[in-house]
Image (cartoon, rainbow, N blue to C red; front, side, top):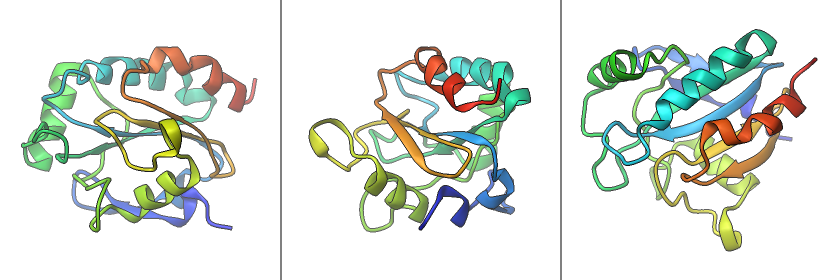
Length: 161
């Protein structure tokens, strides 16, 4: 059975990162953008990350420029923007595509594991979130309008006490 830990992705600094490095952790995987109406969610994502990192949560941010050209910066500029404006310390990855023929394999798998509203597998917009348990299984998918703070109870249910 495929799990999230079977994938790898390029970190925002250009190094290859195995998601197996996060084995045993609860993951919140999010496609992000720097110039979106939902961009302020970076603050909530960082807050949730800081609140639960010691209990085993890791937020993984995947910049994506497929929705209205809302992440036009280079990876380096994206990293600086996120740190400077929102204090982001959770892992960020190199910009990817989440839909279409060039969708990152992780996102192809995530979408096949948990469909969106009305059974659609397509990512509708920036800041779609996937909650993954410590075994690497997708537990839940959240739309862009769901604030990170609003899924804290779901996160807590997956973390050790």
